[in-house]
Image 1 (cartoon, protein in one colour):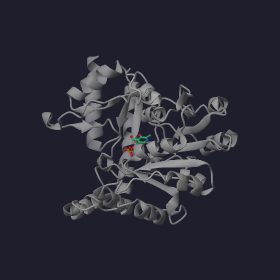
Image 2 (cartoon, rainbow, N blue to C red):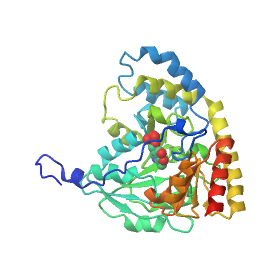
Image 3 (cartoon, rainbow, N blue to C red):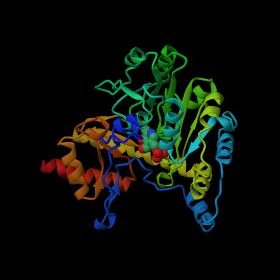
Length: 367
Ligand SMILES: Cc1ncc(COP(=O)(O)O)c(C=O)c1O
């Protein structure tokens, strides 16, 4: 560690974000299926692609000086039930998390997370000097430890990060559970409610953030254009919260934050209800089909509300992912998320799912 006097101690101490290997060159395989990053395997919204193509020659110009237009469009999309100033818009969901932590985490303040979960939370919190308190999900079903969270809260607690449905487990907690947690939290503690996979939910008792924000709860919801809209590479995300928190966090301003093509693609994607519907159907049908295959093979999996399934690897997970990659099927070991011995599979098109099962079955037979 260097001793340069300008270096901030909490940045020096922060855990380094774990870098991934780049996606291999897909042309090295006859068929390649990337089922490792929970992207939309149906691809980008066609309306978004069309909007990008129409606008591409204009990229020499600065556009969208501020995010107000995006926030207005989102407010209309939410039928003005959430007002423009309640949205926090940024260059990806991850950047919204950075804005939240920049605004609300002080050196020494505590943030609760529940592992295994989305790995960037820890790094983003620590880069602002926050201390991460991990109250792990409870095995065997990865349920949220509500009492554990409530017991961990103290006068230094700033925020509780909840991921619903959770990544990488796909598990969820119900409205009743969230209500109990919110009731027990001191009123100054803010809940970051990451529901970036909410479009894939089919459970009746799922608690949608919009109802809580509308009710004035101390909550910041997180959404993204990277999942159902298929725009992961364009990096657009947004949060929505109470007018008070929205006004405060929107002071963290940067001119021309979101690129023109990303903004226009996001506007078009919001209107592409057909793509949303087709993507949901692909995931719901694929999920049922994959559950059946896992059942037939005697593989344990966790029922998922996301566009992915976590399953127990019958052979060491790193070995299995590496052998699958040799066959052109890329899946992600749960180990990096804190779920050792498991594998996260993104639900794909029927063709991709079938190829996964084919390769997986042949590796099981070899083992
Ligand atoms: C739980 C969760 N939250 C947030 C994100 C951030 O998405 P993005 O930065 O692409 O908007 C992801 C992406 O995989 C995620 O899984």
